[in-house]
Length: 247
Image (tube, rainbow, N blue to C red; front, side, top):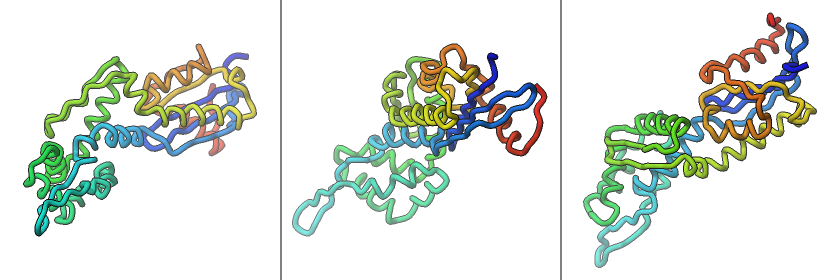
């Protein structure tokens, strides 16, 4: 009968979790669970790296005066990368060993001046958290419209983007989502046609490309829970604790 086998997908901030449930009257049993360490936060970090790093000095040259000539080296942006994308520890960039090369590059002028001024402002005002907040807004807009602008006036930056450009930026994570989904169904010993209802929940399940992955496989069977309450995941967890559910 319809509604006997459910697949839940919970695409939260830190992880992507799947559960296949079988309904027996008023009870549910867990057939299989699967999860990968991919969440909305990973997508945000990917966007930060791809979209913001080039505007913060990545790939720029560091010109310094030597004793008898000017020395050109690549700016050591890799020293800054992990601290920039982990906003809780970005404040640690406010140390001389990081700020001195940035100020040197600003003093030297040159083609990368604007990028280094932005990097200085991000460090000085500890803006990483704000940058991530803007990225999240931008990502949400691209879930509802075909085009959005990542607008960050604090560092004089505005990046327009089409939804299809965004989808190609996150193509690797999207492939991982599709693989994990197929692996879950296989782990349950089922084929896609055996799944009667798919419940999607978690903020990142709203990304149209994620929804497409589901509808390609389970056309007409994908149901939305309120994406910010993981009802289905809660159901599975409660089942592990041997709780009974009313139908």
